[in-house]
Length: 201
Image 1: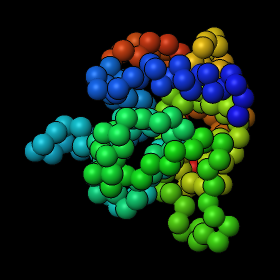
Image 2 (image 1 turned 180 degrees about the vertical axis):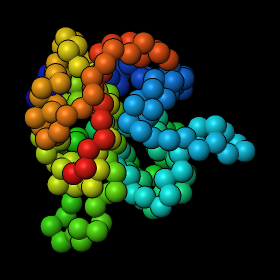
Image 3 (image 1 turned 135 degrees about the vertical axis):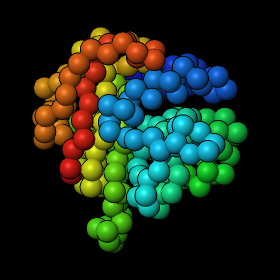
């Protein structure tokens, strides 16, 4: 791990702070979800219920408020996130029966003895790769682990203290091995040029 990456993680952790007022981030996630083809199935409690119909989901970088916290009826749910969050956040995931792997996405893998049927049905990744050490390696890991990738990323954004990479349509298409959609969005706090798509792995 480089010092630059560790400093970027510290910046990100300070940005989220105690994770209490998450409304802005969660509103943006509604846009990410729509672009990634994640459908909400309203129930009596909330219009923001995601019925996963028994699927297993791996969320790379979902942070303190993964979309999985709005999900129901999953076989298995895992969030991969290298940042340490407050204890109450971790307890919330535990109560929701969502596993939390406190590791970088560059380190995820299936055990060699794992049955291919144990692969997650879907991998979700939204607004993550700018924050990572090696975005291409994470994509390559995902291609070995999952069956389907749903992705939303910001592109052509200059490097900043917390964002270590400028992602482009060309490099994402190359790494994934497919063609995503690119457009400018301005809704629910999301403003900028984005890349998104659904890709079989």
